[in-house]
Length: 119
Image (tube, rainbow, N blue to C red):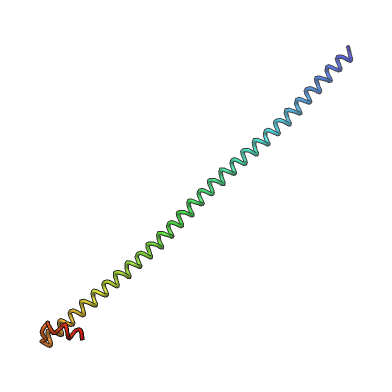
């Protein structure tokens, strides 16, 4: 009876200790795995968000610089073309006015003014 009681008590104590150890180890392993998975997912999400934000900012900056450069080049080209056209028109008008005044002063008929101007 004593041996049986001791065996029963020992068996129960071993079962309790073993179960407790297994529960603790399982809980620790699950905690580690869960934490690792959460850390990995969080890192991935942060990396994705950061990369997306940087790409967006870079694209915006490049677009702004490109647009500014194109605007500047277009403005410069238009200014150059406009100035050239105005200069040409002004030169032509001055030449015409000067030729007309010379013809009037000299009293040369308009038919001969073309020949004299060409010479």
